[in-house]
Length: 260
Length: 328
Image (cartoon, rainbow over all chains, first blue to last red; front, top):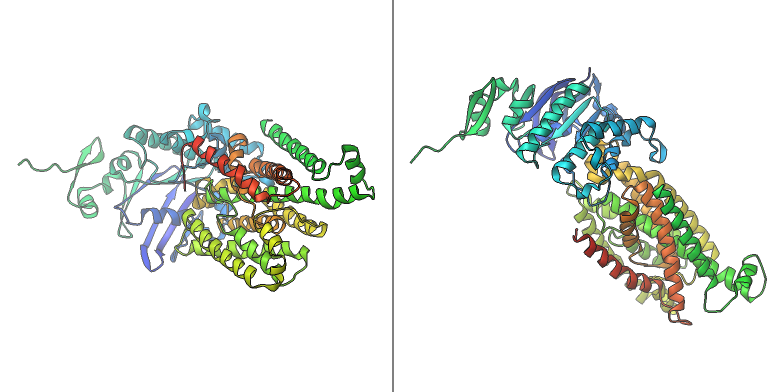
């Protein structure tokens, strides 16, 4: 069991405060979605959890130990982040990209151990990249590249997986497939998964818990039914959205304009 | 397997071009006499081979290898195939420091050290400037590099025109600035070789960390690379390499840009393979270019920078057209 917890975290970029006293934790086997309007501080929360940004106040602890006491490599062996950038101009093969996930464990001069090879093979298999393994990443489609980068994060063999809008460049079919896969992997590997998602319906369908952020504060946290609630959706996203219930999962649709 | 055969081919290419560089020259010397001269005959041939051709060939190899290795590292770090020691201002800083060292009358073996210091100062400045707005972007690195290159160029011209010491040897200094390995002494070569060896060692140790920059600095960090320490170390290595190269041969263009770029299509993007391959290919290429520079209009000589420019520019354009996209 692992636990990544932020306690009363405040974060700022220069004079601009983007997160105010946010407390939030994720544990093994959970899929937590972070939702909220643009500029609310979702990505900042993720960067804080990944140790990429130092909180101005408050602490982040991994299994009770302050994240600041870990080296960069130490964090990378425990927390993987799926990057939003997954284009490169260089002709890395898919296998080489997935192997980047092992960077924190390689020996001197980047020598790979048997464990490294096994982890890379496993990630390639889990994301069904076998046929693409020796293809150049700069020649793949956006969806394929996204899968390669996800495999890279899985090859890190961490207990925590953080994703910043993993579906943002994908069509609806690939969005579903990616989240389906994420849920399956999260369960199989008992990962603590935390994903920033823009799409409330995807969050509602896949997350075991949703955290809503507005204006740098956590405004509600709970099951999809508790968070994707008409009051909250109106308060956070404005009047234009309507919440409907469907098999116990709330769904959000644009309110239709009244007929003229 | 494929990697090993490519590296073996590059080693063979370097050996063959070095042999050609020693065998061919303005004075015709037969292969038997060259061998005798290498192992210590004390006639004119001995002097030509041991004091002129051999240091020149070794110098060209060091310069080409260093520039190509520095180019490979900078391109990887900035995720941009257009980066090289010239674009990032490193070479300009090295040139300025080397010219200043000559103006101050420093001994020739000290010039590579001065050039390294100049390269280090410039690369630090460029990086600091590029960081002002928070994260480093390729565009700001390149812009800062362009600005510092122009500034260093202006100071170099000022020094050239105003210094009495340089006025006497203006032609030699100008020749060196345009890129040439014509006057390399053993002590100078020795100092440069040590600097290059250290730089290359760093490059080989750092290579797999540079791979982690493939998706940007922040992803490198989440993969377990300490971005500040690694970036500093990589820039330090490029300063060592380009400082030594500039001290030996002035401004030799295109090697640092074209060699790593072209090799990536052959050996792949992984820096553990690209770095040694770049050194070997860069070394072989510049030995050949130098051979061309002293034979094409023999007995006169062209600056080797002219050859690398003449061959490198069209080659690079061909690569651009082939990849059908221009990226800044």
